[in-house]
Length: 237
Image 1 (tube, rainbow, N blue to C red):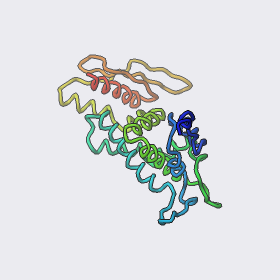
Image 2 (cartoon, helix red, strand yellow):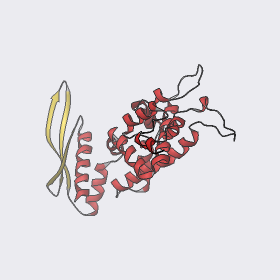
Image 3 (cartoon, rainbow, N blue to C red):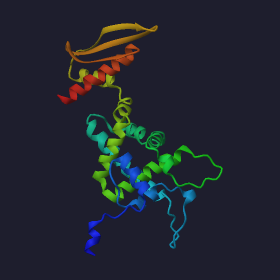
């Protein structure tokens, strides 16, 4: 009836709507999907077709979608890395440890529907639910929306720092400079002592021109930071 259009349909699960809006930044319309994403197998039942209404199928789907999101991002961000390096970086981002931590940060444990009895909540349950959440967002909104939502969440939780830790930028610079016959040098431009600890400031120079600088508690750490900055500048050029 026409007058029903004047009123917005109330959410079937307002607490789920509030949760998704708070942590993912949008209001879901198919809240049953998210309720299923939060339901562990210990609290699930089988329907008349014998299919369990747990989050396991959504977890399977979300795992594949998240893999593609991260692979797509790394492929675009690191055009000069080979397949082995990209695989190593992706594995770290989508590792159970990382997903467990992300789940904790967005208060997933408080949303879970469980029936563990005296069993302790295992960390992997949180990571699995995180993947199921990805699956629910994907089914409701499609790939590009899901990619935008979860890349934003990953970046907010140090995605870029995480992947850069796996790249030896100093070695990459050496390879690049040897190939193009460029003189590469690392110069100590600052050193100081604080509370008995040393801090170094290193500058990267290519054919005598400064291309980046970095600091660290050791010369090696400072060189890596400087090399990363130099590499990023080279990629921009």
